[in-house]
Length: 147
Image (cartoon, rainbow, N blue to C red):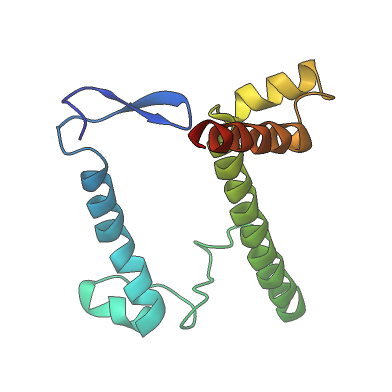
């Protein structure tokens, strides 16, 4: 648990301030509460929001309408289907990129910006193979020290 007003450190990058002593638990609770409404509407259909006074155009899983496509990129049904596929692929690439940031931070104990700066300064010695070699060498030394 973090003390009131203390910084949270995410993969070596600080800056997230917590107002109370609860820390990450409060963030998780807020995330669940904030995501409940959109996920409920997605699973039940857009019509589920009408009793609450929210009227959105569109079907069950793809709201559409002027609020979601103000520039009219998806006026053609063929283009709409193509854009849906592109959006799903973009989300998957973003998830893989986030997993890469997480793995890189866990391995190097630095944030993505520090790792990029280190790579640009010396690409031969600051890459995934060099870091995996260092990790393997460290594990072997730790095991031999225990024996």
